[in-house]
Amino acid sequence: MKVLKGKPIFKGFAIGKIYIYKKQDLSVKREHIEDAEAEFQRFETARQKAIADLQDLMDKAEAEVGEAGVDVLEVHQMMLDDGDYIDSVKNIIDSELVNAEFAVATTADNFYEMFNSMDDDYMKGRALDIRDISDRLLKVLKGYEESGIVSDEPVIVVADDLGPSETVQMDREKVLSFVTRHGSSNSHTAILARTMNIPALIEIDFDDSMDGCLGIVDGQTGEFIIEPDKETEEKYQKLIKDEIESREMLKELKDKETVTKSGRKLKLYANIGGIKDLASVLQNDAEGIGLFRSEFLYLAGDHYPTEEEQFQAYKTVAQNMAGKKVIIRTLDIGADKQIDYFELEHEDNPAMGFRAIRICLDRPEVFKTQLRAILRAAMFGNIAIMYPMITSLNEIKRIKAIVEEVKAELKEQGVPFKEDIEQGIMVETPAAAVISDILAPEVDFFSIGTNDLTQYTLAIDRQNAKLDEFYDAHHEAVLRLIKLVVDNSHKAGIWTGICGELGADLSLTETFIKMGVDELSVSPSFILPIRKIVRNMD
Ligand code: PEP
Ligand code: MG
Image (cartoon, rainbow, N blue to C red; front, side, top):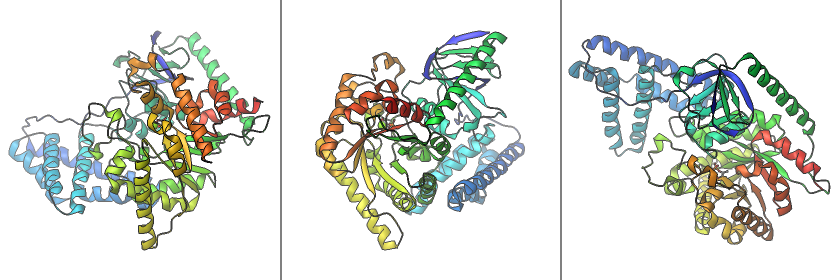
């Protein structure tokens, strides 16, 4: 038995097989080969597998989001069958006697340049598709699996670090816990662990020999136990059983109101990253969805989600929530959420850089596609829109002008959409909090993003694990800003919620209610514990 000590970022216990997750390294080296014919056959085998993988993905997407979800994948299949593309790879292998990986990467670069320099927007769009299909081929040539986890049973995923796009692509049924060497308490991987209600540890100094061993994750003490003895294993089995039992007891609170004894009501909503989270939203009896992090739709794939793909996803969520509020936060990428196909430039200070609404205002076509999908899906439920990273009144005016443009286009095309959709903003910059009196009359609601609000107020990069000891989630400066925002919203007759992680801090639930906070949006597993506190309040 070996015990490693790290830092817990989400509570709970897990017992299971350790799975060391390796990053998919798609970098390519030029290697000399002797047998060009055999190398081309390697490429051919990989190409056939890539086409078959795409077919599987299309079948899955069709079942989940309908036919519209498969368009791009179909294009990729066709490109993999394109004679010019295949000839180019073959020529490079034959003439330069190089490995298939190098020939694929070189062909990708050449075709990318060619498409990208064309005037035609459609052809320009194909440039990114070329990168996608080449990456797909490289993954097959390098022997990587599609989902990232190759195991028949659920496992403890152990990795150096996990990016949002990696975690979002993992099959959730297969993950018992996340354990990483790097990462911070406020990263999106931590948020995902909370949403999935599974324990997670950081700062664990593991080694590859642990792959396949039995492991225990203790989200209370931060211990990671490898090959536990019988006694330890039994102790944790009992703890897991107790945990399941206390969760069962909370179920009594399902279908009950979230109201204090004196009759003050709180809206208790859930945070989600996509359709996969809906089951736990419904199981935990959330009264709505207060934050749908729509960027996970963008992170999950290797291309811009089309209007139709987004429409289907938003519609599915709205329909499942059956009339309950669903607040879709528009795309919030940049900073720690990088997506290759956006081709964002390197920044020295990305947290304060080109992210969220700034990207949407700079790339209105991307923004408009999402707005069209949301406005159309709003016909199928109680959808509202929320904009991230607002700092000024001018931004709100620019957004509203774009929304009006989109509405006019939909009207002209005779496409049904919701005209009077509610629009709110996230208050997650000190600037927005301080001028919340000026912003309130312009919007329908505020939702305070305490993760970023704390980062910007305390000048602490939420991704930097070294600063965790300085990250005081209960800092008076943040609490005062929350109170200011709540008061200003009420003066303007609108409501304020909290959708950052602080909203799920059970030691603050009473404080928030006393401040007048109208809504809390939290990871689904926190819904019933918060309801319990509220119902016990006077
Ligand atoms: C926040 O900043 O508090 C928030 C809810 O948004 P995200 O964590 O996705 O940045
Ligand atoms: Mg934020």
